[in-house]
Image 1 (tube, rainbow, N blue to C red):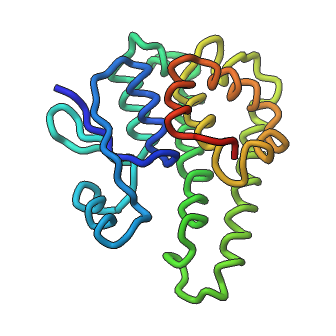
Image 2 (image 1 turned 180 degrees about the vertical axis):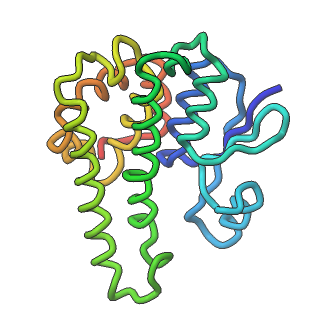
Length: 213
């Protein structure tokens, strides 16, 4: 049986779409817009009460949400793809640390940027919320960049492409854009560029990112 991935082009489903392609899984992509009109938002909440993508329906019809959790699960479910360190690998702890760091400290800032009204109803506060989200994001990118400065590479965790690389590469395309990411994260950029040169990742990116950000 196939997976069903609910997502939207350019949104957080991109990394899961890439992961499914990289492991060679059979899946169907269903486009939904979590920021769309009320009826579209209801459609999203029918499969994920939080109203977010990605949402992945597994072959047994159980549902997974949260991009980092889905990526970690897929990496462990398909060990032959070599996209995640095995449980007993020396770099497993770093893998888990940075996957969760990305989800909690960087991805979360986009939730504010995509809808400050969800955090405070007074529009007079929105500019301040957006500014603080941008500042927090930059600070967290800097923390990660500094941690990987001098790492042997060429990918973030060593010699081969992994899901951590895919996760970073996706977010590097989001606000404030690739140019700002390149300036803030020179230590991460080479792995991102190498990830995007992978033929499978490049095909997924072509479907999701139609222009440079």
